[in-house]
Every structure is written in C-alpha cells, then in structure tokens.
Length: 422
DNA sequence: ATTCTTCCAGTCCCTGCTGA
DNA sequence: TCAGCAGGGACTGGAAGAAT
Image (cartoon, rainbow, N blue to C red; front, side, top):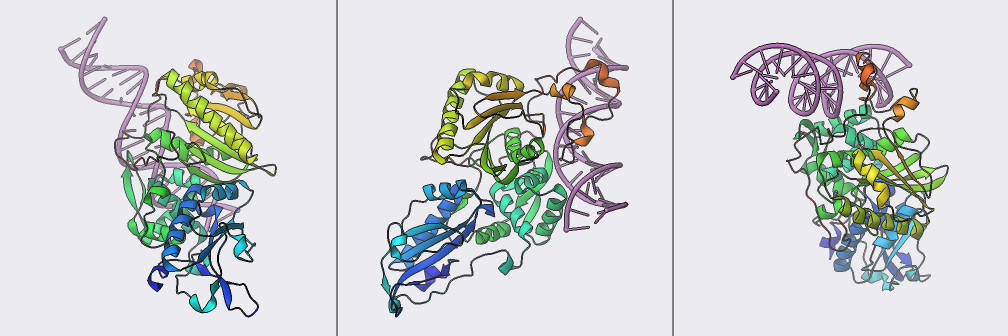
C-alpha cells in the first residue's frame, strides 16, 4: 500500500523483462556511499530495515543497492553483512542489474499493470537538499557519537579543527546540535532535529528503530573513548604518507569490535588500521586471553579479505610492554604495534609479520621530528628550559583520565548477542 | 615529622583574531 | 573560507610553604 512506500526514500527503477514492457521486475534502488559516516555493519542494517518495509508494500519487490566505495573491503563487508530478506543485489556504483536473475535470491517478474508508480520521498543526496557536504558530514559523525568534543569530531571527519568549528556553529545556528557539558568541558551534542536529519540523510525509512545500530557499541571510559576517537588524526600525524578514507569507533566486524578502525590506502594498496585501547583494568591473564583472541580475529579478517592490517595496542606503558606476551604467533599480513597512549601523534614504524613498540624516549633520538598537526600540541614542549636537568620518563602513574570523572553516561553500551565478543 | 593549604605549571577545552 | 596562533577558563598534580 502507498502508505508504507511514502515513508521510504528510494528510486523506483523497474526493469522491463519483455519488449513491450508489460512484464517488469519491481526494482527499488538504494544508493549509499562508504563516506557516509557509517560502517558496513550499520549500512547493512539499514538495508534490512528497507527490505522489511518493501516486503509489506509490494508483492514482489527487488532491492538494488548501489555502493560507492573505493577499494574492495567496504563492499565485501557489506555483502557479507546483508542477509537478504527480499531479492537483493549489491553492486558498485555505475553497475546496474539487468534481470531478475541478477538478484539473490532471484526475483520474480510482475505484470506492469500490477506495480504502479509508487510515491516515495526523494532519496537524499547532499546536493538535492541544499546542504554543504561537510556540514552533513559533521552532523553524521555526531549522530554516531551523540556527544563529543571538537578535536574528536575533527579527527573522525578528517577535517581541520578550524573547519569543524565553523561547521559546528552553523549546525548550532540551525538548531541541529547544541552545547553540552561533557565531563569537565563543554562539547557538542546532537539534538533530536539533528538526529532526524542525519537519519534522513542515510535514507533510513521513517519510523524504524535505528538507534541500536547507529552508535558506538560499548560503553567506554573517557580516556579510552577519547583515544579511540582520535585514532584517525593520530594515524594521520604519525604516518603522513597514508591516505585515510574513513574511520569509525567501536565498529562491529565479522568477529570482534575494534575500538577504532581506520580504512585507507598506502602506496595504492588498501589497508586497515585496527586499534585496541586498554586502560589496564584487567589482570594480565585476562589480558593475554583477550588479545590472543583478538589477534586471531584480526588474522582471520586479513586473510579472508586479503587486506593487510596494522593492529595497534595503546594504553599505559606497562600494558604495552606486557602485550608482547599476548601475541599468538604472527601473520605475514598483519603488523602489530604498541604505543603509549599519552604520546599523541606518534607511533612506531610498522612492519608486516613483526611486533614493534616505541616509547616516548624517542624524543631524545630525534629532536627534529616532524611537527604535529594537532593545533594544541606545539605548545607542549618548547619553552621549558629549566627542567632540562631532570628529564625522566613521565611517571607511569598519572595514567588515569584527566578530563573527567567519567561518571556521566554519554552513551550506553549496546551489547549484541550475535557478534558476541566483549 | 606529618598534615594541610596555597600556589603554579601543565593540560585541554574553548573563542577571537589575523593573514593568506 | 580556513590554517594557525594567542589567550581565557576549568581543572589537576606536584612542590613549596604553613600549621599542627
């Protein structure tokens, strides 16, 4: 019935199966981009929500999902995640299905007079809604985070802080986001209006429940969450030659949920950067068990998609030092690195099939190291002549979060049963 | 000597401003 | 429009000083 369809934002592109056009496949097209700010998992959930709606609205609907993504990883993950409920085909942008057999499970033909032209909402594209692309980008990122500080948003969008500041103010002026106290400092939170625009921008059907698929998955302490959210910016500073396409926090993969995952390319080769942040609250034994399992998951993922993975552990020094005992053999496709989570913007060089760590003492060896991109960092060292006498590695004790009590719950942890893994 | 207070450098967020 | 810098406010931890 029309009613259901009017709450969807899809294109209707029936395929003629006979010359006279009287027999057609009732095809609906849903377009998405890997740069929409959602990981493959969430996009797959949207596809299921759309499928459920279509099933109610039409007798023999087919769904054509058009994915705009560089490389192959995102596309592959999408295909794996989608459990089709109606005949579905997922294709790269610019490819189109030709008949019912292109769908899986295959579709069935309909008589043209039985499938009338549906009235649906206009699929969202940035241009046809008159927003600036970056404005929507910031809004989408914030929709996942719910509440965040500017540096975190800047990191995840890949934009500069100046830009993000400007965009945040514009979003605030439109009433889509608002200032909110996050722990110690004021930050930004998305408002209901902003959330509905973000949902609209992902072409999520009206009236469905998307919250549990949208956000970060687990509850994390302040510092933990912060390091995860800054992962993209951190990588960009540490490895300037890498191109990062997207980064998400708390993203469900086939198995396991990295604290942060950055996806991009290095010298033309697609690559993943998998981050685990450990604040060191579990025993060494638990830690070993956890990381042996997580590394196995990373190895499996790398070999399944033939994509190299850089696996990074960040935490207090003792965690990083202990971590080498948690490595269950190596995979030639995976490089493992560890680093002090306070030493922002630095990482050891990675090498596939090897474990590498680098501690903050590196500041002795290379005084002329590349300047940082993060605006608040440059002031960190320079004018400090008097302390030269007693340079000692920072005391490993001051490791607890400095920015907040961590008592307010900005986001909830949504546990999933199927992706089980903590 | 021990505990309490005060002070200051350091940290991290923000805004305002300048110049390209 | 945006990169980058200066500076303010809120807070912390440690050091120095004061009180017990």
